[in-house]
Image 1 (cartoon, rainbow, N blue to C red):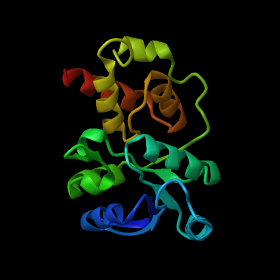
Image 2 (cartoon, helix red, strand yellow):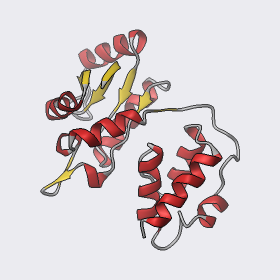
Image 3 (cartoon, helix red, strand yellow):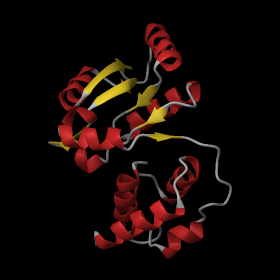
Length: 180
């Protein structure tokens, strides 16, 4: 798989994992304290090729993702689930198998104008994606849709931000229910 955009990752081990999985250029943030030189590289990549934000599925990765998205709102995003990015208790892109990285990058998302009221909390309740035991269901549905995990409110926001169709949502909800 060849990726034309530049992939923004957290560190050199993430770069190594991405390069084992596909042919791609990366920029490493080296954590939350992103240096000016790194921002300059991302500016150039964003304007010329576009960027894909692919950070670890943990709190630090989410904070870095938010920070980069604030500056580059039209950036694409790829998500890896925690269970596919964990090894010996360590969570990170560097721990993922190449096939998991390829799958995540093949489901790249781009934020769209919010689809006002396309999906509501009633949709999550109806499909069992909120309430007791719903965490794993949202995780499975988020993985299937390529939008990553989120609590019920965050998941709903993602559904309405990434242009997910009703058909894809119902498909994902059905798949998450069968994982019980």
